[in-house]
Image (cartoon, rainbow, N blue to C red; front, top):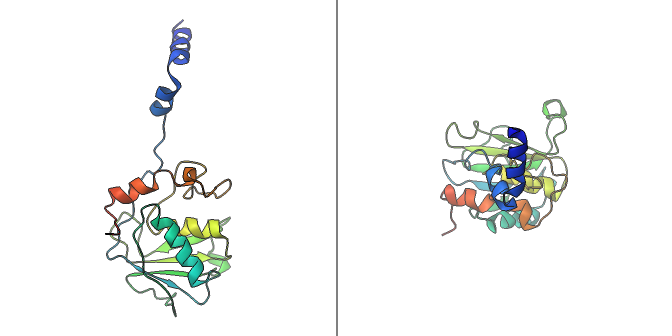
Length: 178
């Protein structure tokens, strides 16, 4: 009897209230903290050109990310320097995570202390994969699908729906382009 009453009440509740009640947060963690706002180096091994990387970072800026200095340059991929994000081609297949389309490595696990450097490894010039990996400069994975930061890019579109909650993450982390 209680179950029938519950189901009846559930069916009478406005749909919007139910969505709010059961809404899953888009991000579980706050935006990553950096010791200093890094400079982006597009390495010679990168499958993306400096202009392609700049276009993707500009897209992130439109959703609240801080403006980054971007340049093509020789890279210290084996000994990363503090204050840099390196974008490079795919690395050793023996260390490549299974089923990964791109990988972002950090100086230390995000959240433990401010980040010092990051390596973004891209085996191809796929723009959706690159946009996702660039997002890891600041953000972890999203719980929402389709979303630029969802662990799979299947179904991701460039519409506003794929960027839900991103601007709020940057605002909460006090990133700004002022």
